[in-house]
Length: 193
Image (cartoon, rainbow, N blue to C red; front, side):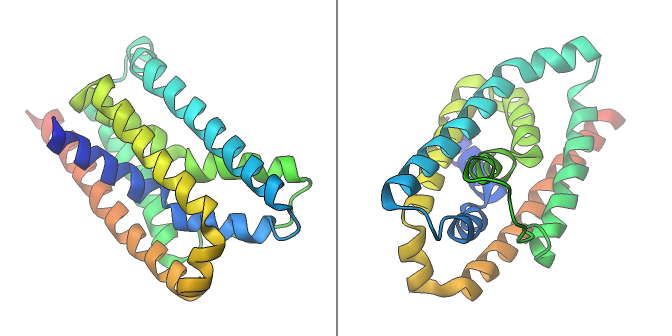
């Protein structure tokens, strides 16, 4: 059970890539007060958690209603993750765009930066392999780490700089690609059985 928790936790952490969200957050929160920054982090993480938990509960039921098998979803989900990982690795995932309002920019951090297609796909696959409970706790642990990284984004930025944050983000992209290939391989092997 602990091994499964660690595997799922690391998978979520790699896919969420909190440092990428931290870079974006630093960009949009330059004119925020300290109180606004804390409020933004809390709200973004809360929204991300609500969407993740909703999908964790309803996702398998949705697959069942649509008649989609887990192996088929593993293959499709793996391909989606592979595309996302390539964007991370090539540094094209985050584009610095002007946003309409503070509220909109905060929402972007929650969904899709923290809880995006990759996280939702991983949630479905992990639930099918390990069950709801361990997936839930691992996902919440990853969100807690993400919250901490966003909270101390200023400190991390001063300590490592944007260049190193981007390098780590690209390495996360490579790890995410490996996870994606594993999902695809498992799905294909299940279909061929």
